[in-house]
Amino acid sequence: MLTDYVQPGSLRNRLRNARFARFLKFVDSLPKPVKILDVGGTVAFWETMDIESRDGIYVTLLNLEAEPSNHSRLQSLAGDARDLSRFADGEFDVVFSNSVIEHVGSKADQLRMANEVRRVGRNYFIQTPNRFFPIEPHFQFPLFQFLPESMQVWLLRNFELATYRRAHDRAEALEWIHEIQLLSQRQVQQMFPEAEIIREDFCGLTKSFMAIHLAA
Image (cartoon, rainbow, N blue to C red; front, side, top):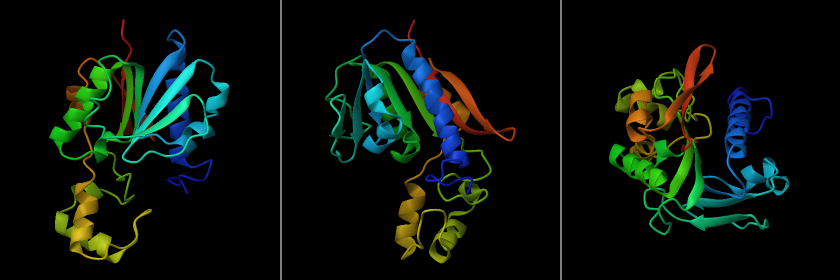
């Protein structure tokens, strides 16, 4: 399927790989060694991208829960993207985050994450789906994000959408709905005012945005 995470030829994986190639080109422009904070990344992702072959790159992963890592240049920590107070200003050469900021909560929570990214990272590379892409990327249902909440709940309680099983009750459906807050290009630019906003297009439509800042 086009949206399958597992299939190598899926749209999602093709876009992800192209995005990561752009990110590596971005990292290669920086003097080594490079300290990267990956907010929401996984050990498996960096293993897929062959972290051991990338000399001079040191990655810290931050998630709600830490996970084991057998790589000397890859550590995993538990934490909150909205509160990076354990890290000093400019501690990382790059902050990288892929499809995370739409999951951290309200617009105020998203702004907290953005401000923390800008504080701890001298440079950053942040990706998030476009609110106005016609296929909602998590439930993979056309225009789901624009449907009345009652209709969203009905769909989630009666159908399995993408990787989501049927919701047990209304409360669970609402929890899933409220956990995702998609952003427009204008909102991304407001949160990352010094960034260049790159559009990631598919069939002439903007599927997601990359907010990229390379310090002078």
